[in-house]
Image 1: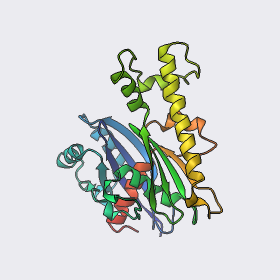
Image 2: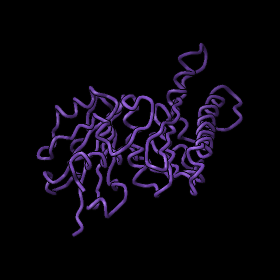
Image 3: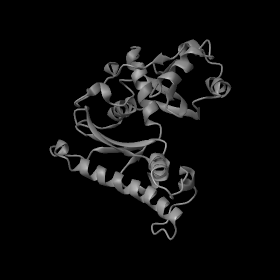
Length: 276
């Protein structure tokens, strides 16, 4: 008999926390798909948190049959979420801290030092890719990562470069005269290529430079010897906070999955708790 699992997944970053409710058809082995995102919201790390809104999302269903899970790059923020948990009777969240519990082989020099978001993306990618197909995952946040999953489903490394916000802040902080360009400015209209004054020149460099770097890395990884024996091109996924800025310029290359990390987190929580 078909039934489903409701989950609340929480990703605690350095400056913001993302909250997402998801639904997964069970058994997972029969319905091979990502957990479906129903609602999402983000809040500053110092709050206030949207608990009333989340309670409305969960509705009147039996909350004891739901699952919550938290992970991220900010231990202080995770501790705050868990210690101040207000959503009783929804069980306190599973804390995903140990990547050794992930359903993923990590084939790099120092597996314990890989950022958890990169590995959660790889877990989700393994749900989407076909057998004998690799995957390339572009995640644009404070930093941009372009990571590779082998045709065997192993996380095998990637590239890390500054994202939009970090690039803009670095130009301002490490020069005497260049102004700080808010990332929100890039969302208002597509930057011109040829900047006729300093602000437009910075906008051009931030946007088109980021896009060009991502395209180059995708091409380099597609041509890597890792995929030489595969008969199909790797699946390319685009996610992260800056992904909506780039999606229309990469739609010939990528599948847009803006909340891939949280969907990966939901999958890991299912595996940890033995849900099949």
